[in-house]
Image (cartoon, rainbow, N blue to C red; front, side, top):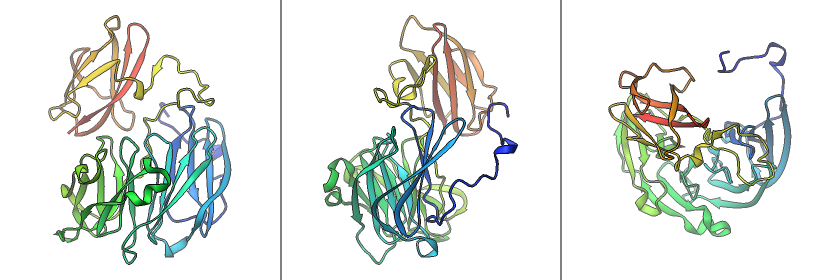
Length: 339
């Protein structure tokens, strides 16, 4: 309702896949047209991947066999699966120290060029992985260590393994060993702990090679105790793949996030105070209207001295989105982070 989604009564409780799937490890990636979605999940005890193409009016299901056989059920209770931020690669990490990394075609949904990586220290279960914002580096945790791999090395990727952190023994309630990972909108990677603690580890510069990635253990203190889980968030900002044969949808004047850096400057972003300044870099354009929304799509009553200065200091810290209409008819969208 109100543009925020809703359930259509005659289209609910419809079974899409009737099979045994690996626990968790479901993830999604934008189609090359910038509108539809690919949702991928692995079939337990097989080398098969189910791929669901979600369009505005239907869901199409296909499958592909590639890579090795992956266990399922309670014998494989951890691990992670994700697409790189640019949607060009897919990684699946199993609980038994094996990771599969493949190229992904956002247009056809096909996987190719699979590489199998065995994570060292086989007595320690592998549980978490995350791509860097530039989609080059892939980070993997096995409880006691965090490793970095260079995916640009192709088939030689396993040889690029670099240890970027070893658990330092810190205890906050319980041991803060490494667990799941998630790349956040602030371009940092957050790592949960395997036991109940009130901390998260942070990779502050994940686009940098080796120890330059600046992994700080137990850097972020949480208001309460937490263990294992982190949000499973795909890249909602990924737009159409320009030049692809599948990039056939009209954009109706909406400027994709990846193409906005030359159009608008927003500073400071993140902001500690909640005051943001906007500057259009194309002098003929002027802002006609601006809206600020929270993560649920709700319109925020922001204070505006003018159309180029927005104050959300009275709102809670977190992620917000702006939608700007220029006098020339362009619509520019992006995100704000209030610390």
